[in-house]
Image (cartoon, rainbow, N blue to C red; front, side, top):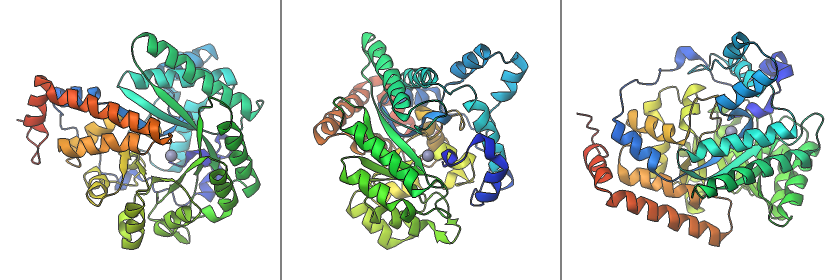
Length: 405
Ligand SMILES: [Zn+2]
């Protein structure tokens, strides 16, 4: 999602600017409430998972937000109102209203440290072993280095505490630039990312470009993307989120991002629309980060049963599952798989395993570390397959024809 292109104090301005937002609840088919067997949910929770497309600003766990709002002196009534998250969004203003509510109170480096710690800890509860957290680094009153250090500290604190309980989690940071800002500003982001990547033991691994791809194509930020790539920074670009974005098509937008050397594509919902682009993505194994639940919540894929992730998998795309904005989409890595199963999009164990392994395969990690992570995930999936309880679950429910009875 491209919420980071917008600021809380410019909602009316943003409404005028971002006409490509497709949120319209009248066109959204509400998610099915068909129950998913508990055994399947248990299996999905148990699987090792990654979250590669994860915005810090929209993913603060609700208990953390509640605590910070209490500290800030908000009344219980105000807190309830601010933390009321809808299942689907009426329009951009509705989405921004909720975004601003949840972002309230997360301002100082200490807030960033705490929210990062809370996010890593809650992700660990559902066996997310590898995360890449993306965040803007320009925050009023703080130097970008202070924000990056705070996120680093939050990750390290969570990692240490989790390790004491025998859980190994690796989290990295992606510096997020915004398309609607100037080329000079995105270059500043790329330079900050490059400086941090070169620090010993740095957790910064990437640079991201988010925002309205139709109005602000990647060509504006070509120099920043190329600078990042030339200086050892991996690049992911939000592209192919909208069918038509202004005068620019989704296919053009994805090609544009690839032309400048992006390593991964965020969303790429329409990558199947063009055979030449598809071949380019498949032949070069360009990883695609897919976030199905929020795609539905903002009407990018109004009918969840038609989500293209399985078709991408079948076409040979290196696609994996992420959450985008955990709080704003009321999701987590386990729920993403549950909804794909519930809506008959992905319901075969072999496909689920592919999506899981595509996570570490797509990580912004050195090759050796990536191979180790893939091996670890394969071993854990192997242990799941050897467990009689999960064997039964797989045999009973995760077949081509869904069978709940
Ligand atoms: Zn996003």
